[in-house]
Length: 396
Image (cartoon, rainbow, N blue to C red; front, side, top):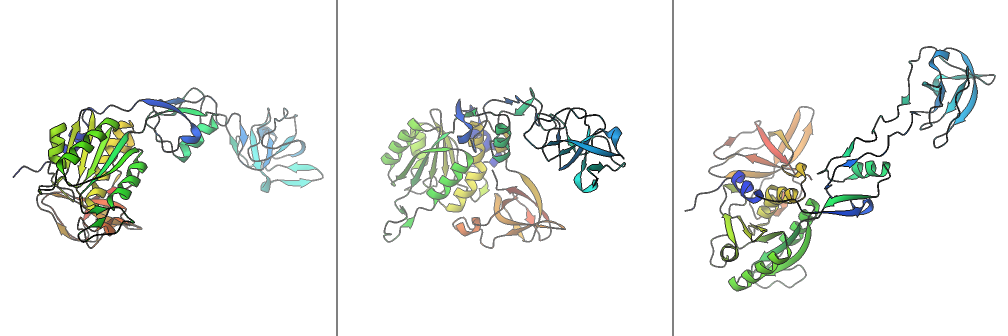
């Protein structure tokens, strides 16, 4: 019997020699979820000038504690005049501080009497003033290469007036579903057949991870067909993902077809679910052969495909899933394989609690529906209720 390989060795083999995909320039309106290929340098100070943090009155701090006439009104988006000596300016949130003013007092603390603003004396110089460049300084890095462009990053770019960015091309993925027992949703099931739940599940995960699915095919349980479709997939994809056909059955052809076209790096891993997992290459194309059971596909996607796609995108945050420790509300024991248990997380005043789903079988996809994390139970370990377990948070 072949020796079971570790998850760490599998990841090392999978990621060895991966080169980031080439950059391409796109409009920022189409950049959501993409990964920067080049560091973006700030062009502008943000804010571009000192401005008011609230509605109130701008003045020289030296004039605090006096009754001051209001010499001008400053709304956001309008340039102020220099502040006349011995006066204050009515100013609104975001309004530019008039030259000569250095402090803003909120309107709730100012009394008006005979067109004079009575300014309290107990204010600090600089109160309620947002200084120029407080958020961003022109000439400094705005967003580093490898940043995934989500909401705040897109706002940062827009604030600089930037309309185009260089991003890494999405890795092209071919998704092959194997098995005569698999039919697509909407087709009539014959005896012994099941609907293909892996394809839509993996398609969504791969798209969330940042991949471009260029091929989706069903592969019959036939060596020649498997070999032909693997060859076709290698011609158009950076990564081939297969489901099923990697175990030891007579109708499991992916492993042998892969070996005939390229090389098999690893097979049979010390993990549960997902023991029969084939990792290899056909030319420069990476091949990840996931088991057919849906939970094994789900876990394998997070553990292997996410970091692989992250390597193509040169995105450091995708190298590993965020980790946290939680108190187990379950008991379990492992043997020679590391267990990735589907758990829900409850955040309480006393810490995080991990609730394990009752049925952890690799065919029970319902255990993944509300899973927040994978609790990682090392080999040859006993976990008792109340003990701390390490969890991988399922998030991009």
